[in-house]
Image 1: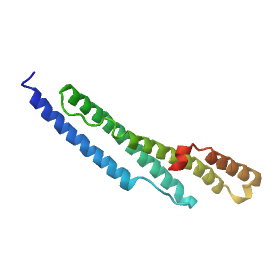
Image 2 (image 1 turned 120 degrees about the vertical axis):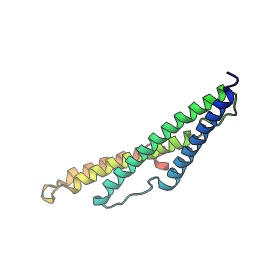
Image 3 (image 1 turned 180 degrees about the vertical axis):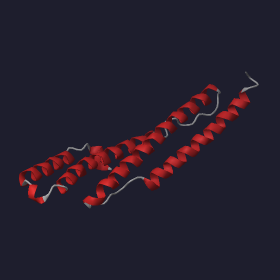
Image 4 (image 1 turned 45 degrees about the horizontal axis):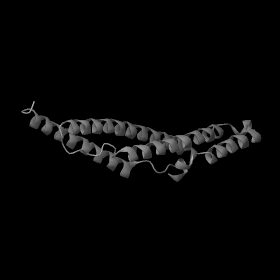
Amino acid sequence: MQEQTPALQKKILEEDAAVTAKIKKIEHEWRDNRPKEASNKPDRASPEIKKACDSLRILGTMIEQTIADLKRVCKAKELLGMELGDPNQLDTLAEDQKTLLEVWTGIAGIWQTIDKIDQTPFQLYVHKNVKDALENKMNEMRNFPNRMLRV
């Protein structure tokens, strides 16, 4: 076992370098490409919001996989008596991603109602129904958790 330790340590260091590269890629993606805004025009907003939600879901999957890889590498380092990294270094980013996805999902629900109203022929509008639907969505927005309002 002792003669295999250097080879194992080398392999773990290679995996650690690969995980570190993944982390840098994720941090770059988050910093430069996270969805920050969408159009306020009904014909363009919903597709942009859907794209934002999809990209955040993909990023979330990447973060989860990288966290699993990071914990696996840290555990291997611990078993081999190597210097440990921080297995929780992506936790804050994962939380931020989940919160931002929650915000975009909430916005998507609001735009679905607006799209539905927008697609209703004018002859079929019932003022009270439109007003009630919009007031319900306003109340939903007021009841968003504080963490969503900070984003």
